[in-house]
Image 1 (cartoon, rainbow, N blue to C red):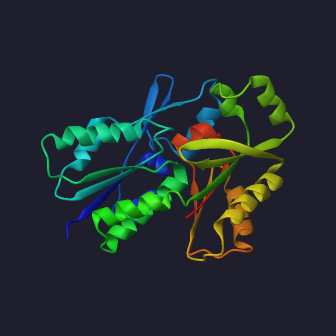
Image 2: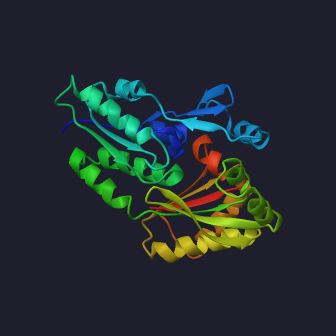
Length: 278
C-alpha cells in the first residue's frame, strides 16, 4: 500500500506538537499589517491580537503561492490536501491550480484537494482524522470518501465578544455595530457550508457561552466517541469555563483547547470562543 501524505494550510489552528505527532504538513498563509507582511505563525498570537486592536484597519490575509503547494507534492506519496473553506479563502483554488500544474509532468500522481467548507478548529479536526485514517492503513479513496462525509457532520458554533472587526471590515453598519457593543450583546455564529452566519445574540459573557454550549449540545447527540475542540481568541479563562460547561452533561473521546490563530482571528477579534465537535 502506498504511503499517504496529509497536507493542510495554517488556518486549521493546529499546534506544532499535533502536526509533528501525525506527520502533517502545514503550509502557512500570509498576514499583513499595512506594508508589513508576516508568515502566519511568525507573530506570537498575543502580539497579533495587540497589533490588531491598535490598528484602524483590519490585517489582510493572503493564500500561499501555487509553488508552495507544488514543492510539497513532490515525492512518492499519495497526497491529500485539506484547505479552509473555498468561500472564505482562495487557498483551495491555489491548491487545485498547483495540482493541475504538477500533474502536467506527473501524470500518475494521486492528489486529492478537499474543500473542508469550514475553518479553524473544525478544519483542524478533519485534518487530524485524515492523518489517523492514514495511520490505520485506510486507502487514499477511503480517506477522501470518509472526510467528504464527516465534513457534513461537524457541529461548529461560536460567540463573538465584539463586532469591532466586522465594523472595520465594512461587514456591518458602524452605528449599529457600536450600539450592539454598547449594549454588551455578543453575536452567536454558526460555521458551516463555507459560511460564517450570525444566528443569535446574547447579553454578557456568561449568557453568550451558555447559549453557544446549548446550541452545540442540542446537535451532537449522545455519542461519547466524538472529539471536542474549544478555541479562544486571547481569552483562556473563557475557554476553561466553556470546557467546564461542555463536560457537565457530555463525555468525549478527547478534549482540546487551542488559541485562534491569525486567519480566523482577523474575523473574530479578541474575546471570541469557538466550539467544534466531530
